[in-house]
Length: 106
Image 1 (tube, one colour):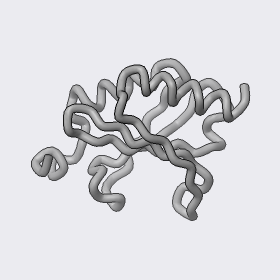
Image 2 (tube, helix red, strand yellow):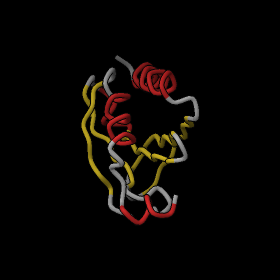
Image 3 (cartoon, one colour):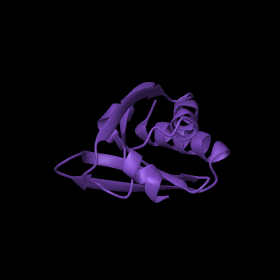
């Protein structure tokens, strides 16, 4: 499958559950070429980084900021496939898998 197909599938799967979802393409020394998803649910924000190279197959690694307000916060690594990433995002939101400082400030 192509990169374009995979990213569109992931984006549409996330958007089905989370209407407030944006995606941007980026490139820097820290992540290389990547896609950045911003997802908002019930006042909480989740920022996901997916390296383009990781999207070449059905299973891919991704990272999210433990404190989305601080890009120097810990990056938590996860692994999903093209179809279950929304379930993993739901787990993060439902179980408040964020830094305690972030949760106190929202």
